[in-house]
Image (cartoon, rainbow, N blue to C red; front, side, top):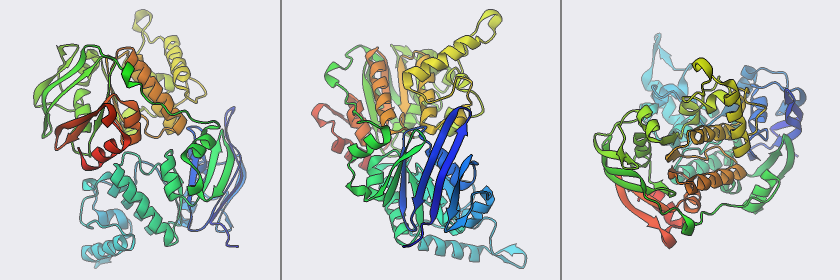
Length: 495
């Protein structure tokens, strides 16, 4: 039999009293796309870090192509061909595609960089990996999907033999998601090997050739023939029980007065946009990147200025272009980019929950007890897996970080909740928990605007979907017309 490319045996990792990995054994065949599944906090990121050499295990062994690499450094494993790519690609946006691909190995002639030879070499590499972009383009001008693929090509060019992809489709449109998955499949057919970490059952079933499920730090199931598993079976394996999908009862949706009003709003070349959201209503925004949907959310949060029009909360104008004014008006915003704009990575969970609205006690000093109680409330209400309020937030899994951010917003008791990808990086069970939480908040009279790249999420969660195209509203879906296929079609064509 062909020897596996990667063998991880009896891996153990503890953090204090918490055991992140408990005697985990995983094998990855050469040329496979190995799906690594599990709830937030199940141990996926810890295992990926151990394989890449970024985390030292307490016990266990690792072998790459039969060679023991257990005690090798991260740099040694990188030289051996192990690459770990997270949601934030290793692409440098201010450099060209050529410079990104050949950084540190640019061809020289008479002591100077030979740019013609470099571009020709980059073009050959792009062609060999079926990535059709121009070598001289600046990487920052590429779409998110193109940047993700470029980062993978960088890994493969640099002797990448085993590439670990951590949630690679996060933030991509449906079309970009399909393109990336098809591209990875072609590379695997050519002999490349991938570990594919994803919370999306449909991606795992369509793409992966083998799989391992982690639950509470243990490997509970491994196998092949992934496509034969139903989405319900995978969800049950991941969570340990059947996952009950949430479906919003639109007949009981709030019919209160207008809570959020957008009148003739123009911003960044988009508009005019007119929009109304009632108290107790959940409205989804659907549109391709650049259509104006995401841009509108940032204007409402005060992160981008409007050039004309007005925003009203409960009939009162909100000063534009200032986050503080939006917050004072009762608008709470969840960013789509948790790492860059959401968490304060070096601060505690309690600090992150209260960031920007610190509880004060006597003499205006921070009330540490209230901060701790607030973090415990978030843990209880959102089922955050954490050791305690003082734990550094970057020690949490991505999904648990996302829950803390949701807890921060809700602690402000907003009138309007603006959510950009609220379940990004969240496992299937936690996603349904967040959906129910949003539903509960709406029933308490909050107006909710939400943008989600997963059309199924939009179709199940919202009362109506507003379609964006060309920078303005181009229709909406309500009642029986608000279906998965209708949302997916609208999202694909931009309205």
